[in-house]
Length: 544
Image (cartoon, rainbow, N blue to C red; front, side):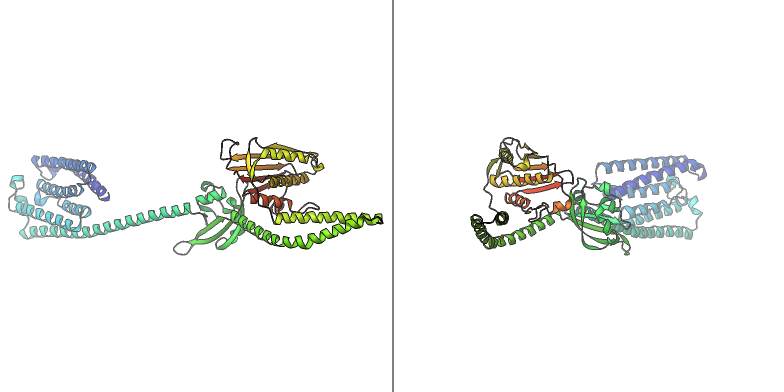
């Protein structure tokens, strides 16, 4: 492709040169100034027309096919040599001012062909030039309008010197231009290869940066973002266009505390809130990048989403704690419950006696009441530490909530509470009905205590994966919302931790048991809340 382009440029350059030659001949009236005959001038005109026709013919062939490229190149060189030779014959032979055009032909051969072929062209030019000079000097060209009188003005030695100098010039031109052309072609080939390598490397780097499974960004020395890959867009919710050339803390505020030492951070963590309000935990590391002289250009930052990893870590820690609690629960059952039963029985016998002082009986009633409370606490503790595996059945969700509403009507805590059951009719969920009654009971009680007096609890459900709720859904999401006081972020983080309660007299096991039951069903529970705006629980369960 490059050779074809070079040949086309050469042909077009010839057209320009021939046009300039024709124009100069006309302007300077060569017929009068150099003594060219009418026939000679007519021959020059025909020669110029022929040059145009050869150029057009060659361009058409090159446009039609690329297979004849080398043959067309040879044609151009041979034609140019012939053109210059005929031009010398028509413009005075030995006295023609156009012998230098042989040099242009040799240079063209060096550019279009090899150095060896350029020498062949120089040899051909030398033979033709020497032949014209000799034939003109000895009067053999009178038939073409070149009388020997114009040549006889030169001494034989001078004529030989002119021929010798021109031939040497042809050969030196072929050698020098051939060498330079070879170097140029080698440089072009090396440049093309380097350009291709750089383009390939750029595509590879772009592909790696774009598709790597971690957020990658670069900043300048003044902290402005340049590169912001696709994974970074997905993690942060910020597009490359929005992030480009903006200060890093403006786009990701969590980086602000680290900007004074951002050039070399081995490992750090930060929190980032997405445009959707989701809070994520990022782990990142950074490294400076420099130019070839070691001058700093900016910083590369690699960051990853640690949210799920930290959640898994928290879950693992919770599981470890539960395992320790479960191991301890057996000992508690034997070491506390049995003596507690003996104490309760003994106190009941004493309280049932006839000679018990009323003041003592009041104290014994307090002991019995506290004994029962302690026994219930131990029962809750054991139920949490050693949960029973769920016995899943097909449970109509709306009916389960309705039945629970009927039970709550007798509870004074719910007298001013409105429970809205918005679960769709016909939604069947695979669950342990008894365990989920406990789940909803704990959630309702927790909501009631958060509302203090009047308020509303709303239960909703939606399924995913099927067009109809009458068939088994793939996933069910149950939402319980209340209009209570809400919680701050600190309370939310500790919400499902056992033995952590914000209510006086609370055991801190109610919501922890909810978490364990949902987890045992293969589901997840998420909570969102804001002070003064209530709380929302989202329970996601597999449909079957």
